[in-house]
Each structure stands twice: as C-alpha cells, then as structure tokens.
Length: 122
Image (cartoon, rainbow, N blue to C red; front, side):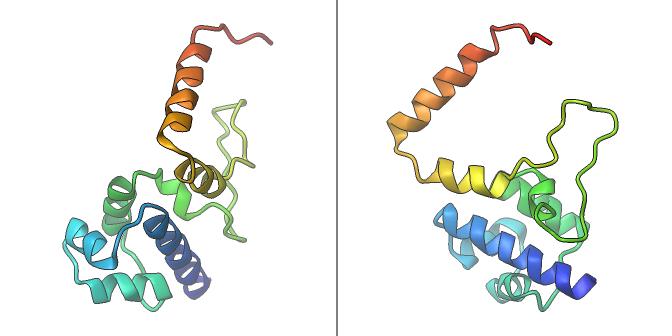
C-alpha cells in the first residue's frame, strides 16, 4: 500500500505544482529540500514525511486531505460533521478555479461572501 500511496501523492503534488505554475526548484526552496527530492516525491520513489507533507500543504495552499483524496484505500469520514460531503473533490475544484480569469475569480468570491449572510435552512 505504501508504494501505491507514494505514487498517488506524487501525482497530486505534481498536478498542484503545475496548476500553480511552479517549478520543482521553487517548491524545493520553499520546503528546504533539493529539486531532485521533489522529483523523487513526484515519481513516488520517496515517501513524504508528515512534516514535509504539512509544509507542502501550506506552500501549495491546499488542505492536507488534498493529498489523500481519490486514493483507493482512503475514506474521508468525519463522524462529527453530519454535513460533510465525502465526494468533494478538491483536485477538480482547484483545477477549475485556477483556470478562471481574475474577474471570474473575483465574482465567485463576491458570491461566496454574499451567501454567508443567509441562514442555513433544514
């Protein structure tokens, strides 16, 4: 399982890095490793420690769960939150949002800020 997860995590890392237009060198500098190490992470050759995963999550501006979603042996279950949606796909949302123009992104932020004014019904 570990090897399969390393490959999965590497693909997620590469996808997010590319969606932000970052080089392996830029990501490596941000988390204080060599770009060769980022290559190894992306290929799944090396695993990512929990500390590095947290650094990557913060630098790439994704929740840590991003690296686990879509992995065949992982279930995102939050027993304390009955409103959680296990089918939420951050990869899709991230790719879609990254492809939008600045005015489109601003409009979405405007819509989202307006929806917080509504009280949840149900």
